[in-house]
Amino acid sequence: MDVEGRASKGKPLTLNLEQGQEKGTQNDDYGLASAHTIDRDSWQQVGLMLVTSFNCGWILSFSNLCLWPLGWTWGIICLIVVGFYTAYANWLLAAFHFIDDRRFIRYRDLMGYVYGKSMYHLTWVFQFLTLLLGNMGFILLGGKALKAINSEFSDSSLRLQYYIVITGAAYFFYSFFFPTISAMRNWLGASALLTFTYIIFLLIVLVKDGKSNSNRDYDISGSESTLRKPAVKNMRKALYLQYTVGVPFYYGVTVIGYWAYGTMVSAYLPENLSGPKWINVLINAIVFLQSIVSQHMFVAPIHEALDTKFLEIDKPMHSGENLKRLFLLRAFFFTGNTFVAAAFPFMSDFVNFLGSFSLVPLTFMFPSMVFIKVKGRTARIEKKAWHWFNIVFSFLLTIATTISAVRLIVNNIQKYHFFADA
Image 1 (cartoon, one colour):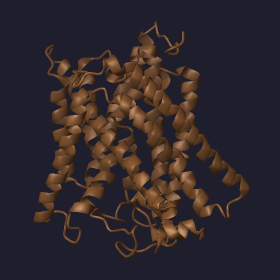
Image 2 (cartoon, rainbow, N blue to C red):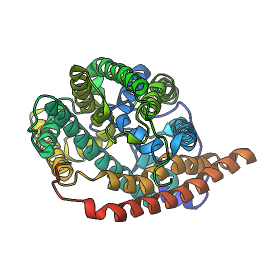
Image 3 (cartoon, helix red, strand yellow):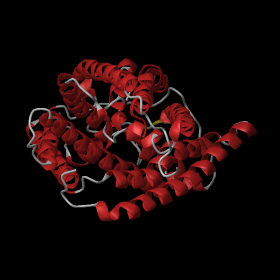
Image 4 (tube, one colour):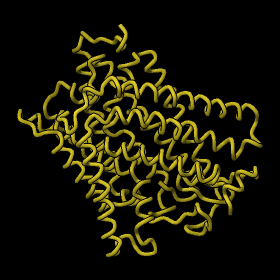
C-alpha cells in the first residue's frame, strides 16, 4: 500500500483495538519483522519493568532539576501537570497499537503510517537521539555511583573516567547476554527488590537529615516492549501499574529530597547524605546495579533496530553467526557511548537541550497528532479542541524550553572541559 498516498488523499484511517496479524504477515513498509520477540510478554512483566526502570538513579537528580529552580509552589504544580500529561499521552498512545488492521510495535512506524515517510524519519531522529544521549547519561550516572563508593573508603579516588569505562563494560556484557527486553524477565524481580530497597533506605536518611537541618533555604534560584495480545488492554494495565505503584516512590524522593536540603540539594542526591557510611555505599551500589537493567529498557528500541538490520532474523539470535554480529553491534555501540560520556561529563546541559526539542514533541505532541489523524473525523468537537490545544501548547513549550536550554549552555560554556573529573 502507498502509505503516503493514502494519508495525503485524505482516506480515513480506522482504529482497531485488538485485531492484527501474526509476526511478519504485514506486507508493507511497516511490518512486524523484528529480530526481537513479539507478543510474548505479560502486562505484569512489562508493568514491573516500567516501575523499576523509571525509578532508576535518575530520580536522584529531580529535586535539584525540578524543585530547586522553581520552588515549592510552581515545582509541585509542574510535577503534577507533567505527571498527568505523561500518563495521559502514554495511555492514548497505547490505543494505537492497531490501525487499519495493522499492528504497530514501533513509534516511528506508527507516525510514518499516519503522516508519511517524512514523519517517519523525523520521529526516528528524535527518538534515537534522545535514547542515545539518555544511555550516555546512564553511563555517567553509573560512573558517579562507583566513584562515590570508592570515596567512602579512599581519599585518593581515581578519575571519573575510569568508573565510566567500568560502567560501559558492565552495560555491554549485560546487553550481550540478555539482548532483548523479553530476555530480561528473570532479572525484573531482583531489580524491583533492589529498587525498593535503595529508595526506602534513601527516604529514611532524607527524613533524618531533614529533621536535623534547621537552616533549610527554599529561595528560588536566580531570584532573590512489546506485549502479548490483547496488546492495547495489556499495555494500559502495565501503565496503570507504573502510575499507581511507581509514581509515589518517584515523586516521594523528589519532594523529600528538596524538603531535606532546600537550595543546597545536589544534582546527585547521595552527595548530600549524612551517612552512615554503609548506607551511602549500599545506596550507590544499588543505583549502579539497578541502572544496568534500567538503561537496557530505555535503549531497547535502538538495539532492536540494529539487530533487525544486521542479524539474520530467520535464524535464532544465539546461533553462531548471530552471536558474532551481536557482539560487534553491542561492542561498537557501548564503545562509542562510553567514550562520549567520558569526554563530555558535562553533557547534562546538552541532554536538556535535546530533550527540549525532541522529547517534548515525542511525549506530548505526537500522540495528539495521531488522534487527530485517526479519529478526528468522528471525534466530538471538545475532544478535537483538547488535542489541538495539546499540539499548540506542546509546540510553544518546545520553543520556550529549547531557548532556555541554549541560554544555559551559553552561560556555562566556560565551565566545560573535555575529560573533566566532574
